[in-house]
Length: 173
Image (cartoon, rainbow, N blue to C red):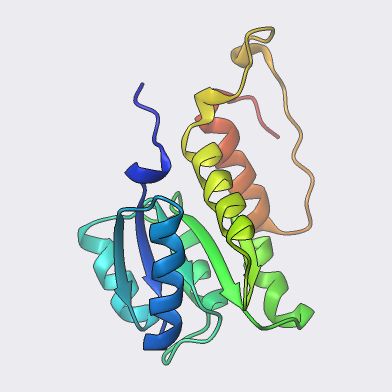
């Protein structure tokens, strides 16, 4: 199976501020990301993903037409988009705003401004999600594993289940 590297990632950056998009794009390029498309609102992002899907969506919290929470909710509720990794970059610190995004199963939530090391950690988390075979399970037969997922968020449970299914684990409660 082909394993993705940072240079293979296809990223869709959703940032309404041209200046912020430029800063983030510069950091992504420095991290080794070569394929980035920049959009400024949620609906354009959803429309774009209908025709070609990225590996990762990186979004600001507040978009002109919706919040990042609403965007990731729509993605997780769509069978074609629910597997796409999501990263939030926001200066928002309020629990009520951040928690719905966290519960949707994101690879990272970065502050504004963020350090290059924080972005790289989020990108490597994305690769870990996309390359489930990189996990050493040689001592276990995935078909024999029984997993109980416990979380108060249905969306988080579904995300965890998708990741485990990607590892070949199907006996999940």
